[in-house]
Image (cartoon, each protein chain N blue to C red):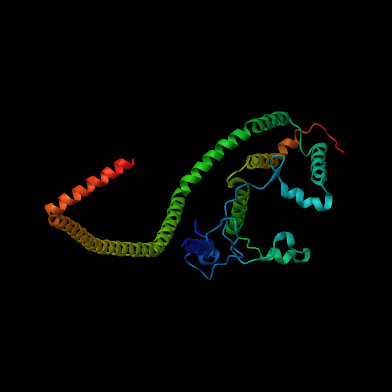
Length: 248
Length: 108
């Protein structure tokens, strides 16, 4: 019976896993044949922005120049450009330039110092909002999966009912056997009682007859002993005793 | 003038949800892959109405936004990029004033 249970549980796990795989790979409810998924895929909100170097220069610019100018290419380009602009005074170093430099230094310090903490706080807020927005969907999904598991469990339990019935049938068979044997036992006891009674009765009769016969014989013998016989036997006993006394 | 409507070539059954950064018109070679001798014909094929120009600028702005401003864990890069961009733009439009403040008369 236990091997039957094990085989049944393995079969159940196999079918449930294949069913979940089928559900995961299934397409959404409405299939649209015209939808061009290849050229116009559904846009997803990215998690991280495109990488930048030195705070604002996109990394793709560096990668573009890497094959032709190596690692230092963009830096040489930038330095050369700045040198050209400053030396030809296309970029005029005015009084505002120095305030701009100081503002840039203060901004860099502020970003470096407070950036991580601000990012962490905003990430927490974002996570809370996301959870709030997705809570309905996630709760429904959780409830449905739990419902699936519960219904599978009840189906499994229903299958186990047949085992229960078999066990109950066996139990009743055992009870019937026990009752039959008990009745056999009582029959045997009754028969033995009757036979014992018969035996006792015959024993008692025999004993009674024997005792009665003995008593009757003795009584008759006593009656048959006449007084003359009694005197003669008494005399004989006395002479015997005298003979014995003389010998001793 | 029709404001606030989707472009005429957008078809929700084919393209799915509307993405402001995508061009839904007829496909053409990208500008970075145009051969020099095809440049004239390529420019002739462009739609040169003010409406199309505005739409192009709008798509470029949305592309930049989706790359740097709208991701979940955005950094400080978009702010610095806007600052540097506006610095460059305002320097350009005030160039004549800055030219007058040059400190040297002759340059290499």
